[in-house]
Image 1 (cartoon, rainbow, N blue to C red):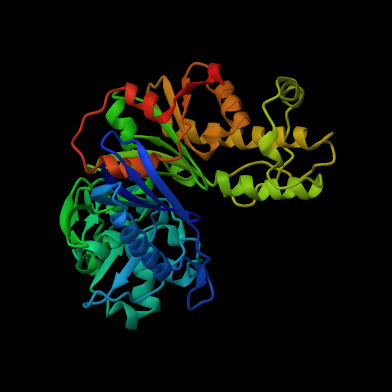
Image 2 (image 1 turned 135 degrees about the vertical axis):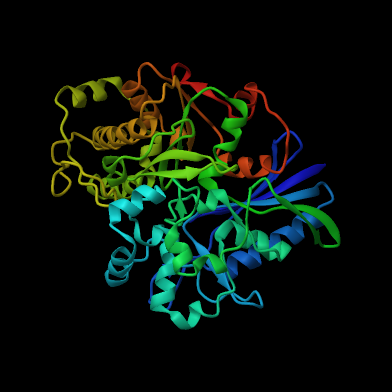
Length: 454
């Protein structure tokens, strides 16, 4: 059976898929690796373990006679660089994008190149520290000049994994446009600071993620993609199948509302509220609004489990209750204090769970407050775009409360959920093909459901 192999590397799970010629999943396997620590003692992904797993997984897949692998690609989280020397040897750990950024180095950057707001507007990237992966390069240059001098190529994470197989260093638009602070969206080129700092010399040539390289793997010629940033990859199936304006909310650790039809310049207020631009695979801007939804959800679930003495995953048994929703919504107020969502929000200094009758009621309240923030993020991404359809992809598509509560915030918009976690992996497979897909593709392969069906 002819297949396309995809490595989908997330912060938590590392996944491997095989898709047939009709983009149907025919094989999958998952792996999880404990984090290691960088020289400063901060946790980071174990890059060496990931590399070994990729190579061993490919070896097993090629030995399986049921599958004939003709193409390989990668979808990974962004905001991460791998730095290699002239011999292709890695020079640093895969730094965690949550690692604190030194204030002095940040201040020196803005003193040289302009105010935080000005840079944010030009690069469509709010100031996010290490999450602005371009700033990791600036930090390396001044915090670790000895290492920086040895760098031949700084490769975005998706392109590094491709480089492992092809040996060809490349950059692509989806990684460059992912809140890196590297790209000037007005000039449609690297920002002036990149050239003035000489960073451009260690950034590989830019190509579209549609690019592939014929590679000899296990004595077979394989079409190898150059990798794609997962948030851009997840858009690909929708853009191919639905030409009318829509909003996609890609949920997981981060919930990202993506609007590829919004061409407005980001405002100061939007930048302050975690709005930014991504890029499509062909380099077009995508307005996005981020929310650390999944992370906060897990934190608060742990709090609820302890307070009500419930077992882990007790929330999975809870379905949306109109009666509870009506009771809480009638005299709506906020009871939760969100620590990891760094947006302006009036909230109590700490969680106030005393007033809830039981776990089910408190869980409904938690979801109401999270959905309230999701609504605001979605509206920022929508802007002035006239849309009548909203897709929910990822883990929260299976959350009955999240979906039904969100539908009440957008009564005039058709909301569709997907019952598939393959969004980014499937997108990475599709970029290797020129095949057109019909609108019914979404319904067939994603098990699309209307809210009224749920």
